[in-house]
Image 1: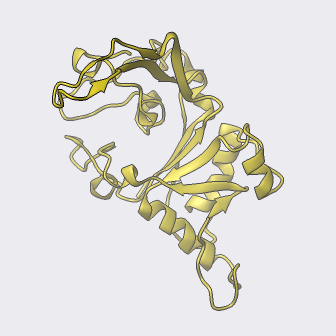
Image 2 (image 1 turned 30 degrees about the horizontal axis):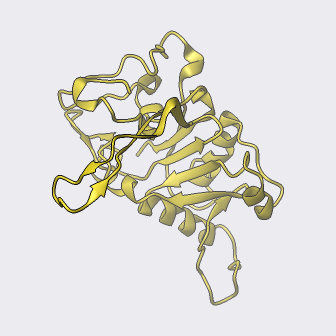
Length: 231
């Protein structure tokens, strides 16, 4: 693992690779350390090692600047490969590693835009639900942690706050390609058995600790993207 002493043993998070800061270098703005490299690479110098960063300007149906319209641009920027059918997405491991992650509000906004953008509900005339919203057969999944994760700059640029408290408080959409962002395990410390010992809190119980060393790596940040609000 990399990082400060207090974080040794903590793997990279997805926002370490995909964020809306300049060159994708996370800036905590609360007195914490501003990132200057990612995986020892300086994206200010290696410009191909920067995530795709686009913005949307409104939540108006059929607008060329709403999230759905900007999905068209992001799809080309990250070079996601769309499946021909929804079934193919689940059957092909290369395709099903592509997802669009959003908070509760983000997923809801897409559902609203889908309803507003046409005159007939998908399920039926009286069923307005969009249980599994998709774009180009790629699912838009709800990630609960994005509701509260403090990843975004506040109005005064003095802190990183949750989505709803950010300077631009509308939702973000993370385009994650798991073919280029995945865990890597140490070849000698993968469920390595340790000495069997008595449990410190239950003396009549024996335990066998296991060690697993791993980290999340991202060899291609340009195949990842974030769509952020500009309002």
